[in-house]
Length: 74
Image (tube, rainbow, N blue to C red; front, side, top):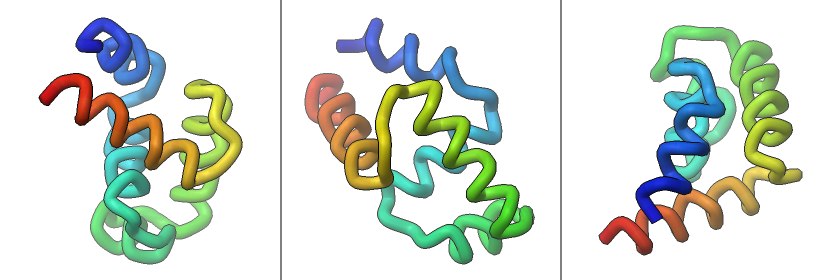
């Protein structure tokens, strides 16, 4: 649903949204840090906030959430 996607996107900061998208692509924290020019520790911090805000407990759940949204919006 488009509304659900907007709700999730609105819940995250711009940087958290960028990190969440990279996580959903299956990238490691190190790869995300290198691509976004931030530290790996900062990526971990953003992931913690993302998981809390989207009510998921791990990367696999986040990837599943993003995959569902992509499927529903296709």
